[in-house]
Image (cartoon, rainbow, N blue to C red; front, side):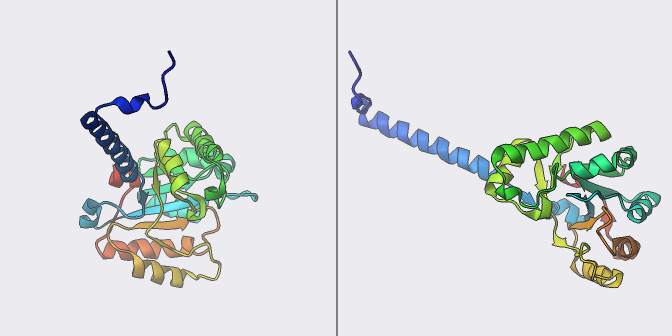
Length: 244
């Protein structure tokens, strides 16, 4: 005999109340888990603040025009063995394969994921394309560095709740920055960049610069920024050592 659509209502009222309460609790638990997981990191944990730690991070971007590693920035960081994190997009990695492989061998350098094609509006891409942007870059960077990337940075910082969830579902944590250094602007002089960064930096901050030849004043400004921050008691560390 066919079951009528109304038959499930025969559940006793106490049983029905327990069932609905359980379903509601499960739904709330799922929402709580999702909310707890979704996180855009713009500052380091409190332990890093107490240690007066900051993270030096550098974006290595490329879209249509080939871009290359800024040797002045790289040479300063490597000579001083200053810990830093480099977010590389796949297009840039293709043109700078040997340079990235060399950096990946250094224990104070961390290379992370900045998407494949550096689309400045990943928030406008469909879910499948967002995932492809992350995974294609991951595959290429792993082939170059022999390490899995763990952190992701959205190009131009543009994201929404959906794209953040897409990236986190792939096992990544999304890390942006505490404030913009302004170094992609050619009108920002080394003196202005230095003054601005020193004014805005706080313990636990995530600093962002560009190492793709378009951080116009960073090569000249960075030695002074690092020296003055150290004089103020700051220490530098890779993101992975600070975020765990």
